Structures are given as structure tokens and as C-alpha cells.
Image 1 (cartoon, rainbow, N blue to C red):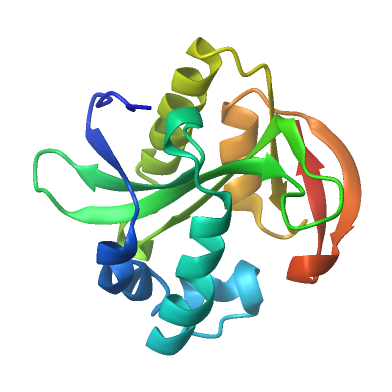
Image 2 (image 1 turned 90 degrees about the vertical axis):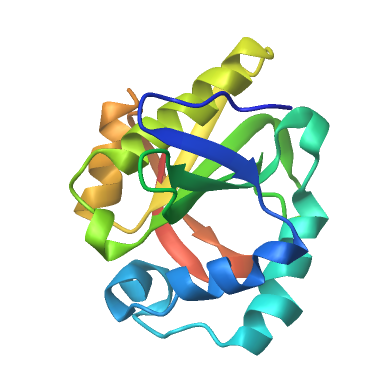
Length: 172
């Protein structure tokens, strides 16, 4: 699957070669605040845990994976959009309901990049026939909830995502 460039952004499916990029995003405690309480991710965890998890759910033909987001005008890699079946790492993954997630460098916050990128990825998947999308955010993560609302998502329910020890809100 190919994600076309949006107005300001370009997209590339993440692979092993992007370990440094993935690590760099996770080195800001504010970026990680709603992921794990603000703990920076080690290089070992990127290479030994995060990349293998990405490989487990990636399916390029279906658009599943992590999409690196780059600002076209500067070629700066600023964040990523995750696409995978909802509840993928459980006994009941939902291949007809795709989870969207995002993580962006703090210096890009408030510029609409997350919304633009998530919308572009979602719309590309919608064009392929995907009809249901969900996202998860902690109740205090107002910025991510704001992105969800801009995507037209509405609160559905609270959940405990055991594999990721996550208690948050699912928005569809």
C-alpha cells in the first residue's frame, strides 16, 4: 500500500532501518508522558521490543504498520502513525477495526501535523475498503483526544488493554 503525500507531509512505512528515528522520538519525557509516564525508551528496547512488535503486525499490502511522517519542505522526520488491527496483541484481534495511533516530536505539537497525517492515512485505508477505525488515549491526554475529535471520532468506552497495561478511552 502507498500513502500519498498530503499538503505538508510525506509517508514511508517503517522498517528495521528506522531504529534511530524511532529512538529519537522517544527521548522526550513529555512525548512519553501518556505512553509510559514519561520514561525514555532505550535503544535496546527499540531494537529488541518495539521493532519486533511492529514486524508482528505489519502487513504492507493492507497498510498495517508504522508510517514515518516527514515534513516535505524541510525533510525533517517528525513522528509516526500506527495502523494495526484493534486488540492485535490479544486473543481477539479485530482485523475489521483498525487502531490508529500517533507519536510526534514535541516541537511539532500544535501545528496540525498529527491530524493531517492521521487523516491522510485513515482516508487511504478507507479508499481500500476499511470502514472502522479506533484510537486509544488516556483521559488526560487532551491533545490526542483533540486529534480524535478532528478525525470525527466519538467516545465509545473505557478499556484495559492488558498487553500494554493501558487503561484508557477507546474512540471510534
